[in-house]
Amino acid sequence: MSSLMPRAIVVLDVPFPEKEEAKQLGAWWDPVMKKWFVPLGKDPRPFKKWLPNQTEAAVKPASF
Image 1 (cartoon, rainbow, N blue to C red):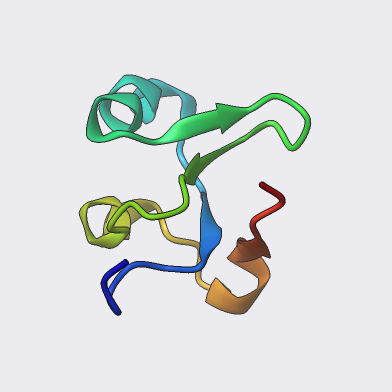
Image 2 (cartoon, helix red, strand yellow):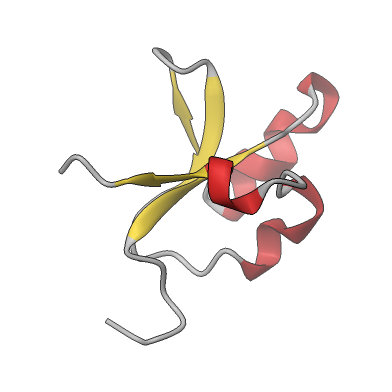
């Protein structure tokens, strides 16, 4: 795994009208959190516009 790849999922703040764009980039939907996220091992840089202001609160340890 590259040092640029996160070791936790990155939760995104995706408005409903932009969900298809996030999905096409590779974001996944979590039905429990009801949030889109960047899966473990995927570069989060293409999702920059959806990163919340509070990055620390948006990074969750991977449970898998």
